Image 1 (cartoon, helix red, strand yellow):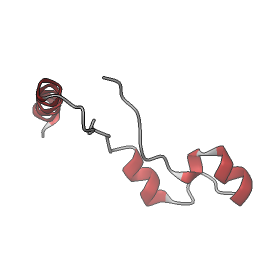
Image 2 (cartoon, helix red, strand yellow):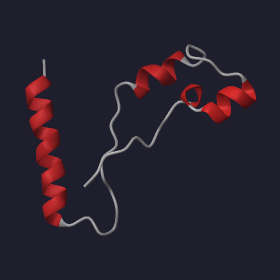
Image 3 (cartoon, helix red, strand yellow):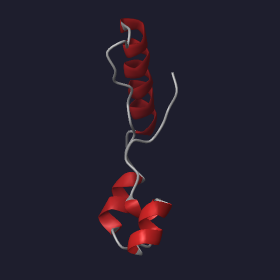
Image 4 (tube, helix red, strand yellow):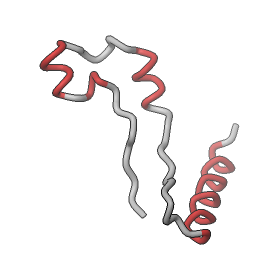
Length: 67
């Protein structure tokens, strides 16, 4: 399984920055949330074993960083 980001602020995309002139700081809430979100795998062929792996990985991270 790989990882990727499915939500990228328009201020990080050259097509939007060059065409519309967006710059870092134009959408502070978007940028703040982008730094904190993760994308979890979700697709029709995801097996139970893969799903369990993802759930356990998320639990481990939450337990490690929970304040």
